[in-house]
Amino acid sequence: MSTSAIAVIVDHAARARQTARLLQAAGMRTEVAEGGIDGLMLADECAFVLAPISALQALDTLTASRGVPLLLMRDEGDPTHIAAAAETASVGGLIGLRYPGAAPRAWELLSLARRLRSSEPPPVRAPLSWGATYSETELSRTAQRDALTTQVEQYAEPLVGPRKAGRLAEVAHELIMNAMYDAPADAQGRPLFAADRKADITLEPAQRPRFGYGCDGERFVLSARDPFGRLSRKDFFGGLARGVGKGRLDTSGGGAGLGFTLMHDGGTLLFADVVPGKLTQVVVVLELDVPTRELRTLPRSLHYFEHRSAA
Image (cartoon, rainbow, N blue to C red; front, side):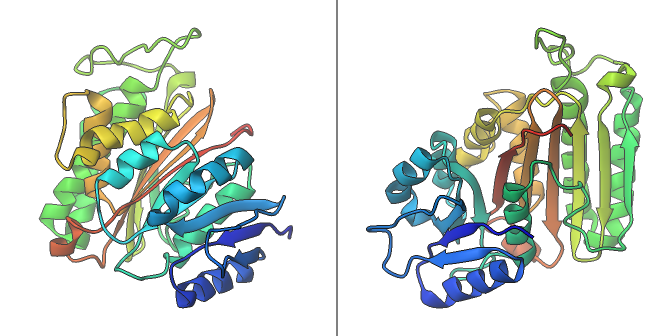
């Protein structure tokens, strides 16, 4: 297994050691910036920099000049963090911590490291434990939307209760709408169906996305992937900033702000993987052990990756 150097910058030594140990176990070399940010040098093989969000301004110029993604840890759901990510091209993602001072989730950090070392997106069911069931359906006509939304709610209710099941059904509906109506475009990149989201449509085989859902008892996963690859980093973080980033549901900007706000609120982690012109893959993860009373304030993890290989 090849190795990559990683500069892990955290605000206390215990978290640095824990994070470095995890990445080393995955076959990666780590470099902990014990002296802080001043004088930090990035090795040529640096894969990414992990840092608290308070270090964004100090690290942006350094990472941007080297083309190294910056993954920022945050322990509060401050909506301005999303706006900062939208405005800072070096930010690859925001890692929402489960509580102040916590280390990143092991599975999340490993999945991010794997993405940055691979030229291909991971399987949509990757957040689930091996052995969990996952249902995936090819979408060809509008009538499938409502049927699948109902299936998700009925499947989720005994697992998460009626309130969360209803929210997951809303996320499912939005994922399907984005994949069926917003993603398809002609050869010149002009949207085919986005102008009228209420119209009944039938998609040709080459236009058809896939929608999926599943659960392993710890995490509930919803996904949509389309064959167009038109979701940009600007649209992803910008849509979130228009909605969530203002601290309230904002529908003034249209589908992107509303859609990503629903996805943000309905899960605890949101991943977007894009192969330009070939694939957009959006995965929403809801951790089932988060109490409902904490779900509103828990800082979400939000990640966007652009891959250059064929999907």
